[in-house]
Image (cartoon, rainbow, N blue to C red):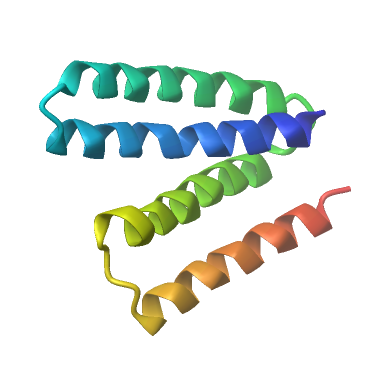
Length: 106
């Protein structure tokens, strides 16, 4: 169950930078800022739950990695962030690292 909590925490980690970005480009800023704050709180809660059985270093790396790669992907798909080969390859290396951490966990 801890890995499910950790994945949920990672996806919620995507919510707060997304909310901040949407607040910057929207006429209605408050709902997006509220989404950001709720995402931060939920992400922290699920990380807390995951760390009950997953080592802190592994949990933190996976949590931030999911958030970073997810936000990176949304930036390319919806906000016209550059999709250069070096950026894509670098994000791919993060994903490989996350897979390695999962596979090495006993």
